[in-house]
Amino acid sequence: ANAAGALRCLAANAENKVSIARAGAVEPLVELLSTGNPEAQSQAAGLLRSLAVNTDNQNAIVRAGAVETLTQILRTGDVAGKTQAAWTLNVLAVDTNHKVVIECAGWVEPLVQLLQTGDAAGETHAAGLLGSLAMNSNNNKFIMCTGAVKALVQLVTNGDEEGKTQAARAFQSLATNDEAQIKIALAGAIKPLVELLWCEDEEGKTQAAGALSNLAVNDDNKIAIQQAGAVEQLVRLLEAGDAAVQTGAVRALRSLAPNADIQILIARSGAVEPLVRLLKSGEDKTKNLVAETLRSLACNPDNKITIARAGAVEPLVRLLRAGDTEGQTHAVRALRSLATNTANKIAIYHAGPIEAIVELLRTGAGNVKLVAAWLLQSLAFNHECKTAFLLAGAVQPLVNMLDSGDAEAVSVAAGAIWNLSESDDGKIAIARTGAVKPLVQLLWNEDVDGKTQAAGALWALAGN
Image 1: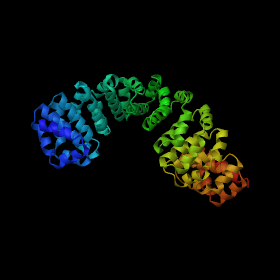
Image 2 (image 1 turned 30 degrees about the vertical axis):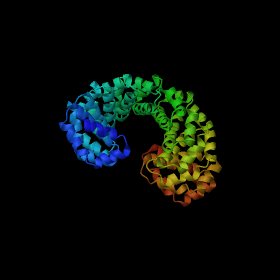
Image 3 (image 1 turned 60 degrees about the horizontal axis):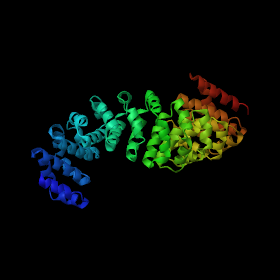
Image 4 (image 1 turned 90 degrees about the vertical axis):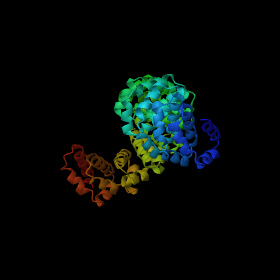
């Protein structure tokens, strides 16, 4: 125990961590985990945890069989040993391959017991390891069938700062399906998680926002989170937190925003302007989340005006042109939602999205083509806009969509062609692409909306 303790002090130095492992310390330390007295086990586990911040050392520790012996200490060790064992396993679980080894070692019951009966440090490290292991769906189910949720609620309510943070992290990992979201909410987690948004620790705020974001996927939880006062504080964190906190706040608002009443509250709480600032200057993943949030907020007619006036259109168009696939998807959806307002249509058109929209019609993945066609249909409202789409080559990809076999995509494409057919240039361009035949075939389709849009397009084309 004394030797392990001395080496543990030396391992505070990064170079020493490498030297100690290279000198062959790992295997005897793992042996000490099984054969030593409680104090020796605690010192050995602590030293292994210090060494485990180095990737090569982590691999050596796992190869030496430490996971099984650390899990045994979780079951039978004293309080200090259990705490050190959980802490060490938590460090090892950062590596996905090591996590698999831990998952095979029978960790659930002793870890939950430590969460329920350990000291403050033991509870914290147990919560941290549960949060890491709960990212696996099977582990998630096992954890939800134990007393972990109730114990985590106690920790996020009454624990110290780090304990609350790790409990929130665990809830974020666990709240990934409807059953878990309901169970966690019923256990009373929402109120203390919302209160954690006011803590001084940035990581605590980040983890609380992340947990609330996942819980808010459930519609009843959206209301409970709003009633607990989360919206106003989340809006404050858009400007008051660091980058991680801001992203967490956006993510939580994104999850809350599909609720019609909460859309109004978010806008009235002053969220739109800081969201637009993040859309202009935030990290790429934050910009994507902002665009998705604005799309939901823009379902409200008043919010459409507020969002456009706050300057959202130009950065959304930039995201449409230069963002990754996710960013482009959210940008085109947000613009489509804003474009139901006439003034916004003009602002969007003047921001220069035409070529980007046509490119999405050609190459967009999934239903991005559909949303791009919707946006085109909304924007092709005057001669100038129609001409711009025609010159950008919009007709051929729309005609291609008529053969997609997807009823909604076919209907929207036919509607967009109808809009473009109302100009003489549009009539000529559409006829040249061979659109007439698939439009006539649509008249025999069972889908009423598709028939209607096709008939309108053919009627417009026949005006030539």
